[in-house]
Image (cartoon, rainbow, N blue to C red; front, top):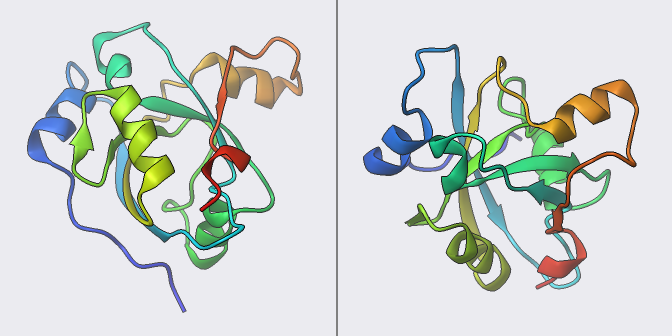
Length: 148
């Protein structure tokens, strides 16, 4: 069994997320259905470093338990969610981080559109690769907070 692929992202959301870059990138959609007692199992962080980073959140941590870990177990590279991936659209919501996080909290079925730019990783990724956790930027946990 493999993980279901979602519909393509909104063209405007994709254009904003990839603005100003011709770097190598991977774009995919993760489709999840929440169930009672299950969390998404990720921490996210925000970066205002560039205009394209202000329209979504970066994955700061993927927990061993949760819906994202289950997705990863069913998926093959490069369609597994990794630290440093950029979430730029949730269902039909894009461009507004607060609304995107709210969508993840309240909706049962989620289609999360993900951008990976291997050459651009947030500070959380650098710290994770260096084995440091105390210097990571503030994150918002979408693990336990998104219990359905």
